[in-house]
Length: 182
Image (cartoon, rainbow, N blue to C red; front, side, top):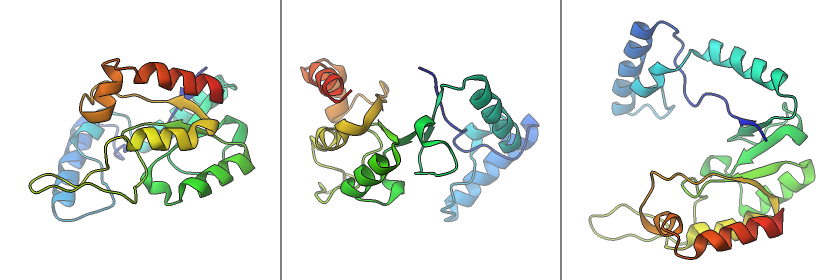
């Protein structure tokens, strides 16, 4: 199965020099409090927004069975070709996400690094506030009936995801739960 996403945060430039400049300006804007997530240096190495949109259309047409992974619940893309990656930016509860995607026939993508905000948080002096151990498992179980894709990032070797990738029994449970859901 082919899956595709729009470019995360492209600049408006196809010229590398101008794109790098736009990325450096993006750092400056973010440092000064811009919350709109302007493109930064790493974003300058990808095509411009216009080029990315053209490539997106071409891929969607070239692969009519491909599914589009979005970070938003959108209505413009056909529901049977849409997957929504669960993330805090959706601003919906677990139940609201499940109800809306079930009603529209939209599948879900689960990424343990993009968990919804939890009612329970762990905070320790000198350490950032974070979700409690096992939260990704709880959320995986909540959404397992609607999941079509699980995105595990092997670069994250800390905590629960590191345990999963180290093969401490969780990988088998994940595969079993996905098979039962599918």
